[in-house]
Length: 210
Image (cartoon, rainbow, N blue to C red; front, top):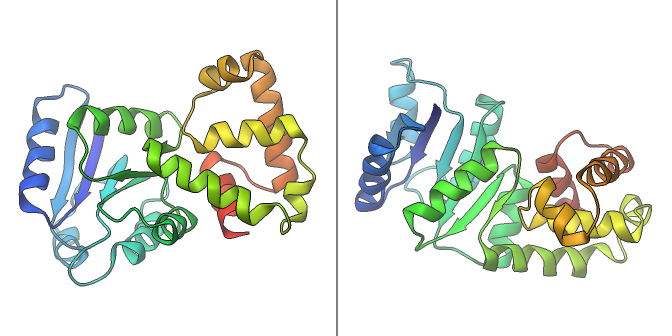
């Protein structure tokens, strides 16, 4: 069972996600609150630790960006997906750099949300197509002249990084680049070593912040 925590101030959307979780055999609700402050009150009641966090950015009180940072420290093993109507490049950039593992733009279907939960849970990066395109443009614009570590990557390794940003699995990267899954794994080991990271989310965050 995948335990889901929700911080979302849109009452109707939060209720829809809760109802969806209640009828899905793979999911269970860890907690659902309309603000960080409400979560902080209920945390003392020993609410369940989540596997996946769904966090809106336009929250009352503490901002969603700050919530990302705090939750990534609080729930070190959890994966965090931003759900928001804000698709501006700077907001996407900041959210992912602060630790978000996924970013889904509203409106979205519950099927899309479930697909993204599964992607993030398996170690992928859950980015809706328009968000992935925005991130890729930012990477191309910012990294060509800046990061010495990125310059150490081969052309093929950079292609693997781009596929990772799109949220593709090892198998999907293998198919897209016409290489074997074991070769993808070898490239990732080299990329992680060159970039000084240990996971996909660390890699993406490091690229974005440089």
